[in-house]
Length: 108
Length: 193
Image (tube, rainbow over all chains, first blue to last red; front, side):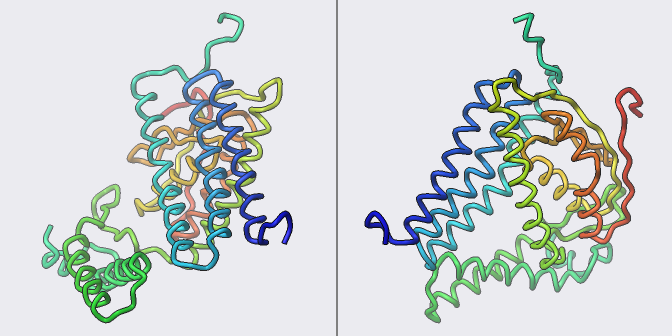
């Protein structure tokens, strides 16, 4: 017991703060990166590591119950389905002839 | 294709009956996990639902290979090795995540967006799917296009990610996982086709 929290709650808080860090990095990347394709990479931060840590935190908070298994199933589903969404967006941009190299910063 | 015809189809890799049973077991296990009730009544409902859905769906889960001579069942993968592969991938994802955060957050962004190309030959379409999914899942690399003859066009955030991908560690692991020969070549800039 520390700060009136049980040990599993402390682990959950640490993991959720860790996931928050990756979500923040993802948002920063989304704003700072110059073009469409690079921004796809920034979204990858939140959808993998951010979600993984958040789900892990919730599993620890929940303890060994059926809900914990369902959270893991949700995570696996997103893990499988998310690359497909990213790929479809990227492929559509490639087919419509979006330039791969970003516009020079000095020109802006 | 109807399931009756499918059970007699000779072009399917492995035994179609076994595929049907595997799909039923997977669906039934999923039912038990989601319902969480172990009464006989619910288990009976679940088993019946699983059998009917598996009977209807099993022909839809077959994928033909590139030249159309064989059909692969998508769950027909070595499950233990597949699970080990995903654990390895999780570790790769973790490392790549930290690299992307480092590249993006620094005051001078270390980015050099580029398109890398490589060609790899697999017979099993699930191997292509797994490889393309793994590449996209790893931050820093996104699969933009995969052609029928195995040409991958991958967008990488900077030189480090491109070099790491073209080393071919992930490709070799997938070839080993599906028991395919490892036929791999990197296509340099300017020598397309």
